[in-house]
Length: 366
Image (cartoon, rainbow, N blue to C red; front, top):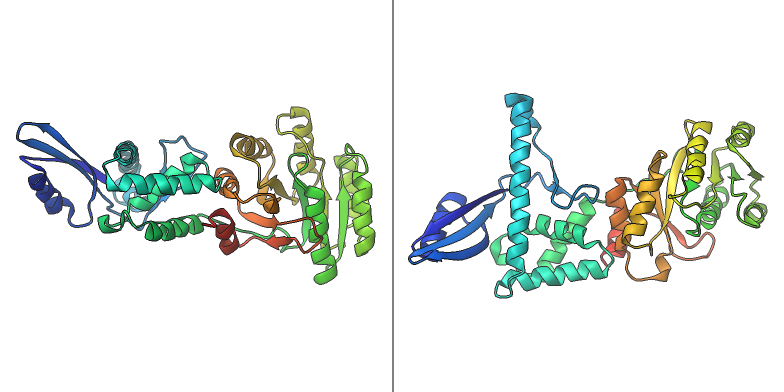
């Protein structure tokens, strides 16, 4: 993105200069009278629309990551690449500042559209910081005649969100998968649903191991599910016992491990999970989160559980609310694919593997 100020004796003359240098696809960010007989137009142009800005909640609000700059390193070395990246980041920060100033002016025709789209994304639970990045990313490559077309912009936003979604199924391969997450998010029920789908429908040999020795009747709840499905259920009190049980069930296609819910702020309990990861180096971890958890509580959970090698995310309680933007918030912060979506309490009906299509449907229903 290149940004430049153009001056002229009037706006028309300044716009001629914009057209001569930037062409017809320039985005006009603002106009201002500098004094008698002098006007300024601020314009921007995308010089590489094939290299979109990556949406990233993990960075500061003013920071973004740009792709497509590898050729600079080959042609001019690391110093040239660093200089280009620094200049690009500076221009993008300036773009954000100017765009936010422009869209906040009531007399600008784009301002109402921007606010309405931002409010729409926020109403769906998407963090406003991320919503603004999505909108700036979308508007940056839109022709000016389309900049106030809400239907068109919503379509472009869906494309941007779709492109940034990744999915994965941790149970697609044989092995051990442990489910971790805060208390009360539905890990045990999620495991029961996955066990039913894989043992009963896909006829895979399985075993369930619970390490939830804190919650009353937690092991019994899993045993009941296990008896109904014909799947063995064992209890491991510590990583050593888990290691032994994994040896017993080494002939199984899948071993699903249920862990006790814990607060990411409880350092002692989180240390237990780190020790659990060492019990089986090949163990895969799925972080289970409630889709109804908002903002900082969701971010705290993602950051806290990143102390262990999380490979994928699953989201529960999609039936308990209409706003599912927190799924996108967590996914962008964690930079991990989504595995499963739980839409109710029925076992196993109310569980579906994540796809980019169903995630966009949940995240952006309107």
